[in-house]
Image (cartoon, rainbow, N blue to C red; front, side, top):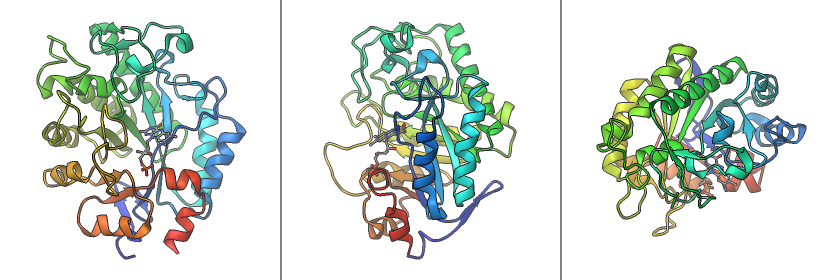
Length: 330
Ligand SMILES: Cc1cc2nc3c(=O)[nH]c(=O)nc-3n(C[C@H](O)[C@H](O)[C@H](O)COP(=O)(O)O)c2cc1C
């Protein structure tokens, strides 16, 4: 266990090891508010500080982007106080913490939000996170500006709440994945078409966030690099986009799958998005997280040794067993 135990400093944040708990929705919030149950959950997961970095579950940046009941809100200034309690408990236990911010786009349900779902194009979501059969409203330039601002406002709140960084969610078929994927984006304006068009909104969000959080705050992006679906985004898209995200100021890239979701239908190999991370790592210098299918610490170490990632995310194994990291790291 040499590489997994190695600390790393990104900007001014020193992370004690290469183990990441990836964002996993818990449905423990009440009307978007952080609950005692949620704080206890993160306390239990971070006890002992065995996990270097915890990325907390997706938070909705605006009500119309809410994905599911029990999801945590970061859409209101009042949310900062509750979120601070999560950051504090994780820090007290010795781990670093980043919050993931998200807009569900066409995966939001009107029944839940009270708003018409929005997306890059008026296409019913065919992806993993699809929950509604409603045709979403195609976003105009004003909608795009509003969403960019919602992400920036949310990131500012994450910083105010004392987190070490913020993560933009662009995976698993949610709004930014809808822009990134040719399956969700049929736009004819500058926000569609080529990969440059399909990541224009991402770059605007990255710049807008940087402006409000400053240069030193950790900025991560979770990219569903490839849809692994016919007509969808490809690993080549992922390589190109990752380079652009690095140039725009992303400090930590987190690679997952796109419209297919976080699993692969064609392989059970631990670290199943390694085909994407290997290709991306060749072209970028910022650290990268690989998540998917890892349940054994030996596999995590092996993936690091093979140069497939700088961090390994362990999701469901930690979800099921809060002592997983303690057992693994000792
Ligand atoms: C219950 C559950 C909730 C999840 N919620 C999120 C989420 O909020 N944001 C996200 O990016 N991924 C989410 N994921 C995906 C995980 O972060 C991770 O990528 C996935 O579980 C694959 O890793 P694993 O095989 O180690 O579990 C979720 C997964 C599960 C099982």
